[in-house]
Image (cartoon, rainbow, N blue to C red; front, top):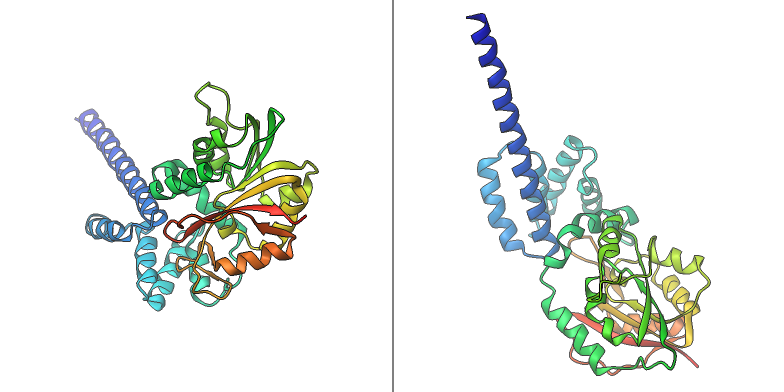
Amino acid sequence: MKSLIANLQEELQRFWKEINYKFHHIAESNEELCYYYIFNKNYSDLRFRLKFLRKFYPNYTGFRFFNAFDMMINGMEGDAKEEFRYVAKAIPNHPFASYYADALSGEFQDNIPENIIKAHFDLVAPFYTQLDKTEREAYIIQFMHNHNLFKFEQDQVSVLDVGCGNGYTTKRIYQFLGKMPVIRGVDISEKMIEWAKQRKLSSGVDLYEETHLMDAKDYLSNQKDKHDIILCLSLINYINDLPGFFKEVESKLLTSGAMILGFEFDDRLESRSISKDYMKYTYSREYIKDLLKTANLRIVSEPIQASSGFCLNVIKKNS
């Protein structure tokens, strides 16, 4: 009898262990999905998912972060701040809870901490290619086709891809980067660099000759090589010291070289502001033009129709 009871108790322990594992696995999967909605700015689906999660996981602290985020983007900043504080206290290693609570208290009005940007892209890396960027990618490809400026006499062309991410977009525009582009990729996110290292051309050759896990401005200031092309397709909305960054770009471009600069803009601004979700900067195009001029750089391309608040420009050094 005792043996039977012991076996039943052991079986019951295994059962609850399995239930606990499945609970946390499903919860973690839902957390990833909620981050996906945030990064894709799909707030209606986030809100629908939260209704489901509140019902089935009322006591799971991790989901309270997304409740707070939903409050924040809907203008309930006081309630959101308190909710973020609760999550930060309950989960001390949460990547964003303390940051958002502090941001809503008036901190970080000028600069977004580098560790927050890094954590942001480490989280988005696994599903970055699934984000809805169809319109933007079509715009980038059309732009590169219209401005086929990269006709070099030499076979090998030096390309530096700053803020390379996982390399997906760079692979899409590879054909426009000269005969035999030698591409170096730089990104602050370890997860993004891991994906970029796996990116291959149709021939099976690696897209990137080298990859570097570094802040883009630090990389530029610490290397001596100059480049034919510098790709900067979606980086500057995450850079604190933009004047310093443009100065470093100017020093690392060959005289005949060019930078392809892409960024999100809002021309209603006088200069720049931190976005509603406190994860990036937004600029007016005139502000960027002035910064480029100060760094001895100029826009040489005629812009095609901008894509939903995103624009591309060909940038060259002043003669």
